[in-house]
Image (cartoon, rainbow, N blue to C red; front, side, top):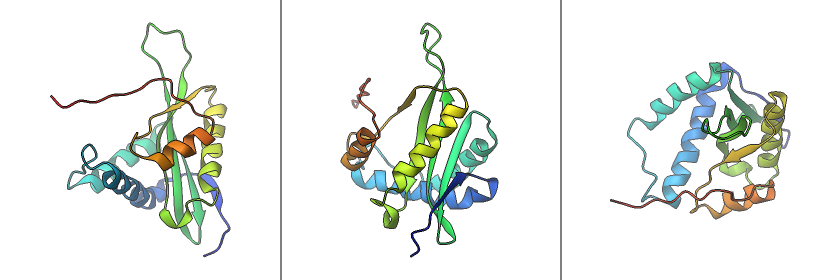
Length: 159
């Protein structure tokens, strides 16, 4: 496997490959916390329709990592706003982030994140937020290394 990686903006022609990586990411979550992450039988089709919308939305940003003739990772984010009473300007929100298992722990996640930060910066977004599963210690460590710290805690309880 060649170590040459190209990070670039996603194109509409990347849709199916991003969809496969996205499904791999979702399945990873179902393995780590099956109580809360369960996929619908048509999750793949739902994901592709979601990607169709994201690929044409000017407030969505998608970057991909290409190596060996295919995509091995992607990062997605969007411009987001706080509720109207708050004075904070719009911020970037990381919505999806995945690196295929064979390419993890090789610095690719950092490269993808830096490319997404450049997209946010280019659109005047100075603050970045994200949500990460409490049951995914590897992702929590990664995001802390990228400079993130908790500022809100989302909690859940069954009725």
